[in-house]
Image (cartoon, rainbow, N blue to C red):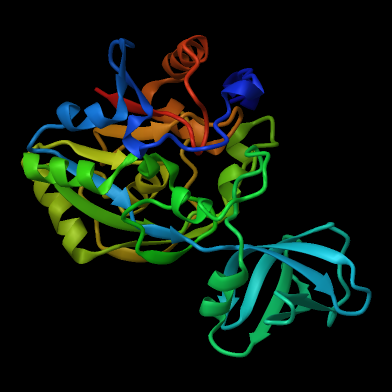
Length: 344
């Protein structure tokens, strides 16, 4: 399976650098995966596309301000650090820019010394390990001096408003370094209207990592390995899904991260088990979906694991055809861009 079969060209003018205002005013392309038929709506119309018997599954992860700007203590040289995940108390895997290796023990000062970091070696896959020390709680200092980790295709400096813009309105659990962007379109009012319609809304957690944006570099997609990410499916959420499956009601996932949680914990009959841990599940064409019946998602990067996942769900030809139509109609792409609803 050649990764070049999942490529397309996009002019930079269609990359959304800022979100729609209000959130639910973004555009919504509706794609039937059985017929290929397309409809063009506003995201606020999603309420009318849902049935009262549906279960809507969202990812409640919360983005941390994982980008830090500091100075090397010895030389004063500027350095940028992107936190990836905490491997043990106070020790984080990270990426640095400039990417020149730091000697073990090198110190970095952040926020005029409010936070100190010390290089503590490298992980097996080459990511730097940094141990942090500060007066007070690390979480509080990080949220004071850290910056929103906007993805690299949003070519601007982050703004204070991004701390809200790049967060879903239902974000609860700190740990993501990338937003589960399909959820950015929901407002509290829209969710309340969906709930009043009778739709059951439940939450899973997957702390979206930087690997979300890592392109597939292997020609054969089957050789790609996903970065593992922490997930959790509670007993209550599992019970809701299993009851809905028994009653033949639709399970609608909001975002590819939600799909990966559900497919990680699925039994062959489509029921799920409550579980937590790390998943490296890589979904590409040929995958047999066990749980979901429909998917709300954004428009994804060429040659990305996210594009492979939606192609697995709706078919490569249907997805690339829909993307071509989205480009012709000037939909806005990627994290702050417009959305798709992929139904049967």
